Amino acid sequence: MREQTVWQFSDDRGQSSTAERCPVRVLAYVQAGASLWDQGIRPSAIFGSDHDDHAVPDTAKTGSLPLTEVRYLGAGGALDVDTLLGAEPDLVVAVSYGGGHVYGLAPETAKHLEEHVPVVVVDVGQARTLPEIGACFARLARSLGAEEPASAARDLDAARDRLRALAAGAERPRVLALSPAGRDRAHLARPGMWPELRALAELGVDLVEPAEGPGANWSTVGWAEAAALRPAVVLTDIRSNATSVDELRTGDAWSAIEQGADVLPWNPEPVCSPQAHAMFLTLVADALEAAAHRR
Image: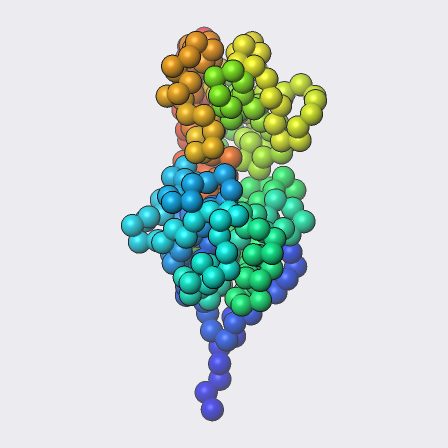
């Protein structure tokens, strides 16, 4: 009798998922799917959260995923178990912002889904560092048979070194991360709550810390108050649930931000791979270098 190969993986909840063979049809939350793709695993289907459109995925989150080859099942509360299982997954990869709760699916849907198929949950919340999150995705990809490109780690190390050097000066350009919430207000990110922003701070980037107040992840202010912080670089949320820069430009409040700072795209749900992080660090480094030259 031929022995069966048993696949096993322990996720960030401490739960072990097993299968009699290595999974090949992976259904993933969009952020997880994009992260696995960079690690060498192509998901067969992806799903979004309640922030996303039910018909099309948010391309701010999809990274380099080949969307013509990866089926999008819909988003959030509109999804049911039958729709998810209709993609015939043999593994589901979800994310959590703490407590092991599956993000993007109704609790009952997540519970019933796990009764039918193994579910791996990766914690992408503020309790984890970006390298820790990336390492979990890399470990999962390896368990599924992928190998990370050797150049990815080298490129990331080079990007880190460059940004660290640019941020080492006495007069560091100030960087503000925010999510536009219409023409009248903005949600300013609290850097300590976002792994990608904490990674910038660890490299020496001078991130603006909003005033204390309500809101664990964001501080909501008017655009005039945001402009008064005088950032040299603004990281602007480009997810579909945030107000677009094009829409902001039809009003007057945004002009004070754009006139005084370089505006960069920022996805608070980043693709957690060395390639994607290196690209983000390079983007920030270019902006810091340009800001230093303007002085």
